[in-house]
Structure formats: structure tokens, C-alpha cells
Image 1: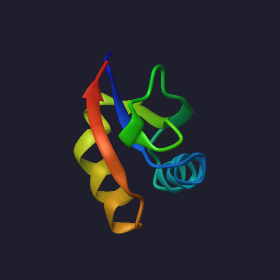
Image 2: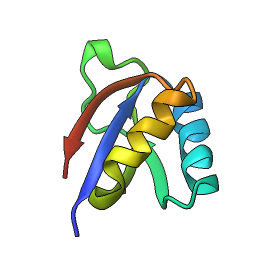
Image 3: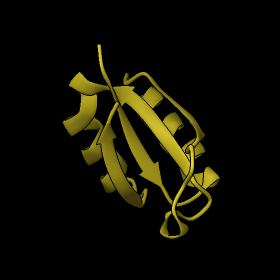
Image 4: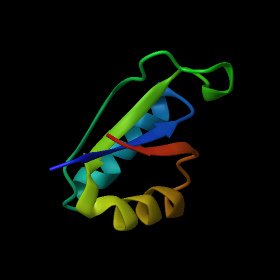
Length: 73
């Protein structure tokens, strides 16, 4: 099963986002983004299963988590 990498602006947003998703029954973890570009802040990403993508992105957005980018892994 593939994963979705949700790039966020800070480690704080990554930790908050993971906790919010877990509280909504979406398995998620975060880690440092490999080779972040200059506009990606601290360079952290939240990883989720691809089938949870749409729901997870809505939850994160509604919770005020700033999403910088989304990539399939």
C-alpha cells in the first residue's frame, strides 16, 4: 500500500497534525523531510496511507495545519 507525504511548515505542525489524525482514527507518523527546499520551512512531513488522503487533508486543513505540499510515495 502506498503512502502520502503531507509536507507541513514546522515540526510543531507535524506533531499536532499527527495527533489530530490519530484522534480521528487515521494512522499517521511524522519525520524530517529528506532534502527540503528553501520554501518548506523546517522540513517536516506527516505520512498517511493513501486511502486516507482526502479525509486527512480536510481534517488537517480544518484544524489550521498549514499544508505546503502533498506527494505520493
